[in-house]
Image (tube, rainbow, N blue to C red; front, top):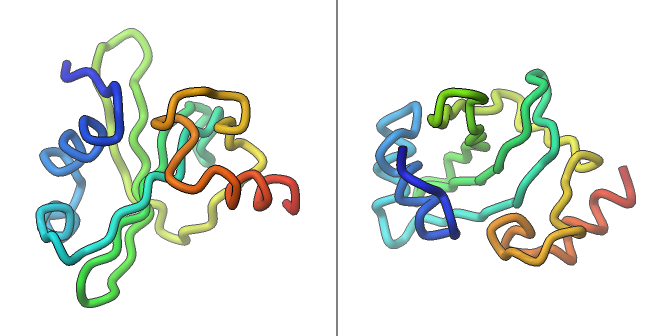
Length: 116
């Protein structure tokens, strides 16, 4: 298992294992955008925690991608949130020191969490 220890390793893992080739291409494209939204203690509809990354291609196609550690297996899995509806009440980056868990814009995410 590749360890995810920072944003670079998270994106490198996602670049290899994203569920769609279009996401993998967007992650390799220097003109595309990606935003680590941080770590969530629960990512519905599953009962597992995980990171959420927003990937935007140069053609403005947006994917909200979830990366979760699978318990007892030393592996990760990834899937795309089809509705893109993020439940900010589960974001725990405001209680973390690690930038990987806090996300790219923790102040904005904290506000979204408080307003949900």
